Structure formats: structure tokens, C-alpha cells
Image 1 (cartoon, rainbow, N blue to C red):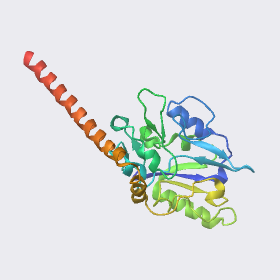
Image 2 (cartoon, one colour):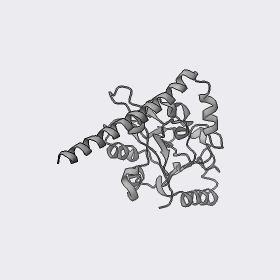
Image 3 (tube, rainbow, N blue to C red):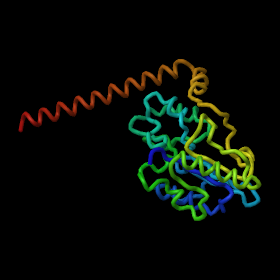
Image 4 (tube, rainbow, N blue to C red):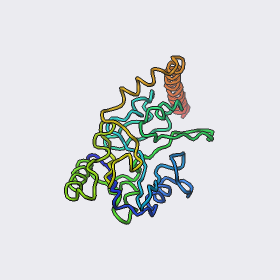
Length: 248
């Protein structure tokens, strides 16, 4: 699959929560009632009334501002589509949390070794794809090639204009995302964030420039220290190996 995406059709969602349960199980999170994004919640359902249920999850932007804001590339856009996170690189600066226009990344505040937490579109499952889509009993969440999903969304809107509000959320928001929503009402009525079109990394840095310089320079300094420490450890490991071979 060249570029994976997710399509959420709100008109098909029955609010069963299978997607949420599958996400928690797959990511080894405690079973709980998910209401907001937190360190143990990568997706949750909003009850919008009148049997209207809407999921929230990472939108996996085509040009992600979270990755742009990260000084050490702990977050990056993979060639397969998902925006993934490498905790071994993370400085804990949390710029990604400030940068995300959808309010997705969270932080393990109470952990001794805290990580940023967010949906990674089950990248660890490979071709099996997102567990939420596999668990959905009605096809409200489906996964596949991004281009094909976008074409399917357009087809549904065109074939039933009385049922669908004529907008694909995620097609233009934040410059385009890999997660799309279609439904019976406009995005704001569905409870989706009001994010304008156009890539957001430039706007991200316009916002971050207001952060005190000492904080920004501190981030750069920590990034340098991270590299130096990692390099020092690599050199030490190499020396130990050389000594072992010499003694052998």
C-alpha cells in the first residue's frame, strides 16, 4: 500500500465503541471509558445527540506541524502515511502539543520516563492496518489507500446529497490529512476542530517565536546534548567491543 489513510463515515456509526476498545487493546492500554485524549486514550467517541456519534483521533496531517515543531525529529511523517513517534529521540519539550491544531498529542506527566502519546495508525500492525477499522462492525471506519478513500468519500457525497453534508473534512484542513470524515452535518456541528486550509508548519513557528528565547535556545541546547550523549555512549560501546576483541 503506497499511502495509508482512514475514512470515517459518521452516518454509519452506531456508537458501539468497538473502535475505542480495539485501540486500547492493541496499544496495551487499560480498559477505560475514553472521553478525551490522554496518555491512555488515542481515540474516543463524542455523543452529539440524536444517535449521532463522532470519533476523534490523530488526523495524520500530510505536512504535520507537530513534526515540524520537534527539534529532534522524534515525530515524523512516514512514507506509509502515519505520523509516528520515536520516544528514544524525545526531549520532552512538548512543542508538538503546542503545535498540533487538532489538540491530539498528550504527555505522560506522572511517568518517571515520560513519553508523548498519540495514535500512530497502528503502524506496528503493518499491512493489517488500524485495529479500529478492523473492529468496526458497520464500516463506519475503513482504511486503505489515501487516494482511493478520498475518491470513495467523494462518491458517497455525490450519490446521496440529502444524507451527506457536502464537505470532506481532512481534504483541505491543515493542508490535507490522511484521515477523512464525512457526515450529515457540517464539521463544527459534528464537534470537529475548526481548522483552516493550508499547511500549518509556518504558522506553528510564527506561534513558537513568541515563546521566550531562553526556552527555544534551551531546546536547541538539549538537542545538542542529546546528540553528544548518544555519541559518547556509542564511542564507549565501540571501545568496550575493541577491548573485548583484543583480550580475546
